[in-house]
Image 1 (tube, rainbow over the protein chains, first blue to last red):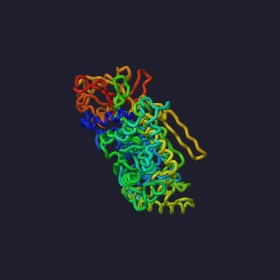
Image 2 (image 1 turned 90 degrees about the vertical axis):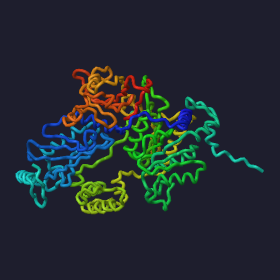
Image 3 (image 1 turned 90 degrees about the horizontal axis):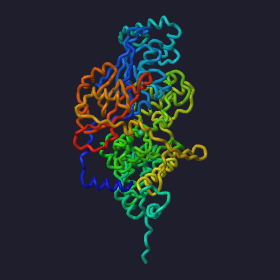
Image 4 (image 1 turned 30 degrees about the vertical axis):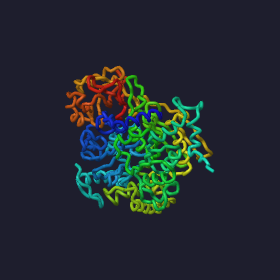
Length: 183
Length: 447
Ligand SMILES: [Zn+2]
C-alpha cells in the first residue's frame, strides 16, 4: 500500500482539502442496536419509558413500573438504565431509583435479576429486561435475596410481608428503615 | 583505514531490496521502497501499556520513522515489571510521553509524537492522517471505537467495491496472560472488529444475590465490597478504580467479608485485578504478539510478503500452540459493510422515503424507524418518541440530513413479506440527485 500512502501524503501536503462530510457524532454499533430495541419496544400498560435527555439520547432512560396485581399493587417504581457503547455485548446497568422494601432489591437500588448479570446474552433486549423487572414485583422471591430481612419475612410470614410492603409504600418505617411514599 | 559502517537496516534490506515469490501483489523492491517507508508512512500506536511499549520499540526498529502514540494512563508501580520503557522515577507520569521519549533516546532517527489523552478526545481528522493504525489495547470498548473510526473513512464505489484510497488498515494485538492474538483488519476486505465481536467473551459477572448472601470465593468478597458495600457507605459518590484510597477501602472491606465467611485469598493486588478486570500480564506474551503485529504492519505497508490471513491466536498455557484462522466478513456489518445504495430526489420527504423502503427489492422493510448520525429522525415506538419525531415525516430527508450530497443512514424495521417477517437493522448509503460534487461513489462510513 506504500504507493497509496505516498500519493496521499503528497496530496495532503499540497492542500488540506476541506472534508465534505457532515459534522455529527459517530454512532457506535451499540447505539444502533439500542435504537432498534427501543423502536421495537412493546410494553405492557403497567410500564412506561421516558428519556430525560430528549429523543436523541437513548443511552440513558428511565422505566416506570406500576404493578396492577400482587403485593406492590398501585406503587410506582422508577428504574434508571445506562447503556454501554458496546451494548449488547455488555448488559445495561439498571438501578431502582425508588427506595423499596423488596427481597430482590437492596436499599441502594441494586437489583438481583439474573439477566442483568450472570445470564445476560446479546440476543436478549431492553424489552426482556423490562418484563423481568415487572416480574420482580408480581413474583418477588426469597431465594435470591439482596434485602436479607425482607426475604426472610417473605419466606416465613407472607402476611407480615404484605403489611410491611403496604407500610413502606404508604411512606413509613419497616424496622429501622424509612421508606418514602410511592403510591 | 576507513571501515564501512554496516547498514543499520541490513536485516530489513534482505526483505525490502530483493524480489521473492511469497511477496504481496504490488511489491516493488529497492532502496526507494526503504526510503519511502521512512518518508511517507505515519503509524499510530494506540496504547502505551505492556503491548504498546513493545510495539513502539518494534516499529521503531523496523524502520518506521514517524510514529504517534496515544494513551490516557499514567505509569503505576505495578507496570514496571513488563512495561520496560518505564523506570521507578517515571511513576505518575503519562505513559505515552515517557514511552515516546525512551524509544527516541535509543533508536536513532525515529520521531515519536505522544498524545496523553483519551482516544475519544481526538477529532476524526487526527485519525485520518495515519497510514495505518496499530492497536495495543486491553478493552473491547476502545477497540470497538477505533474500529468504527477507521471503518468510517471507508468509501465504496457504485459496484460496492471498497475504494482503495479510503482504506485505513489496522493491526490489532491483544494478550491475556499466556494467550494472545494478532490480527489484521483491512476494512472492506477482511472482517472488522464488529464483524467478529463474538470472539471476545463477555466478562463474567457474579449474581448480586450470591455476593450479598452466599459468597464462596475471594472474588465474591471483593465484588461485594466494590458493588454493594461501597454504595451503602458512600451513597452517590462513585468508586474510582484509579484512586488508591478507594482501592484500599474496597480491599479492607473485602478482607472483613472474607474473614466473616472464612474465605482465603483476598490480597490487595487480587482486589485490583478483580475490580479492574485485569488478567495477569506476561511480558513474553506481549513480546511475541507485538513482534507479529510489527511484522504484519511492515508487510501491509511494503508488500514484502503476503500478510496474515487474517487472525493469529497464540496459546502458551500448555506447551505452545499457534493457529491462523481466516474469518470472513459479515457483508451486512453495520460498521464496515457497504450498506444498500439508495438514490433520492432532494424533495423526497421522510414519509415518502419510509414508504419506498417497503417496496425496495433488497429491503422490503415495513414499520421503519430512521436514525442519522445520532439524530433519531423517526421512531415507530415507544409512543413518547413516536410523538416527538412525527413532525419530521413531512420534511424533506435532504434537509433532515443536513443538506449533504450523500451520507450513511441507518434504518430498522420488519423485513420480508407475509408471515416470514423478521426484525432487522440496515445501513443505507443515501445519495441525493442533482447536488453538486457527487461522483458515482459513496461512503460506507458514519457507523
Ligand atoms: Zn464489520
